[in-house]
Image 1 (cartoon, helix red, strand yellow):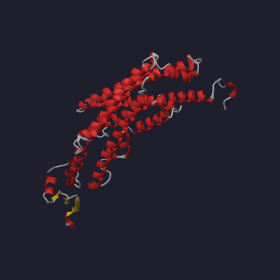
Image 2 (tube, helix red, strand yellow):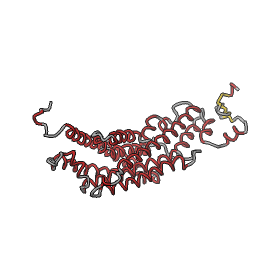
Image 3 (spheres, helix red, strand yellow):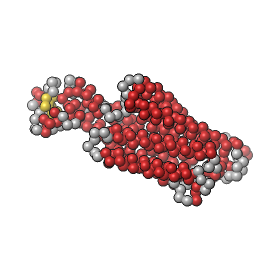
Image 4 (cartoon, helix red, strand yellow):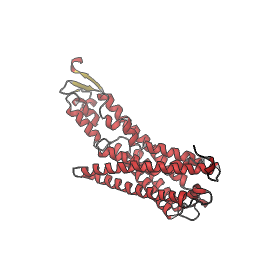
Length: 341
């Protein structure tokens, strides 16, 4: 137990704020460890991919991984230096380290940390919009519904993020409108919309595959883990944990605000890791899954149904029954053996 005699001469609320700042720094360091590990793994996986025929897909992802790693490294370095100044170098600042963290926001080292934080957020949310375009490719849903809505929120987030950076770099940022809450709320809104879009589409694929050929086919692309990773659900939950105490002006916001960028980077790199490892949904996944089904003699008769309009679908529309070599016939989503007809 700590000895009360050695406690600083500060009130309980100030001490609690300092506790939350320090705990937030520890969470930030843990998150950076995940970012560094995933960045190295993704880098080598994508490098191997560029040596094959996937370089058109892997080069942009490789640039994304390098950019996120560099921004995260700059952020962790400047943020930790700022924490050191607050808790060690400027320990006697009026109000203590917690007051220093709040008042000295315009210092160059803290400004660099904020810039890298916002830039990383822009890139990660852009990746999420890209995932929407990939998962909804060839969908009957209009592109402006599935992708346009998320893109609009990203553009608004970009504008608010730019205003936020301009605000915190001014000498008196809190004298006018505070863009901090607006920026993070639009980032949250974008992630919630993307979560519903991505999870909804993967559930549709999962249900369709299970209805036609049974459970287990394409599970690595449509399972629970895939939905959590693809939608960056981890970042969405973490962002909510920050926004709620931020609105309530509770010191617990300090625990989460320092790790937001790195948690989001981790969630984005998990998507890249799955794509690089062949487990993430791509524009070709739907065709690949159905092609493997078509190469299976027992499933050859139903693979055309999953691919969309084809000869089998036309025959079905004409009221005919198409039969595979294995004796499985298809008519209006009913699949029975020839012996039962």
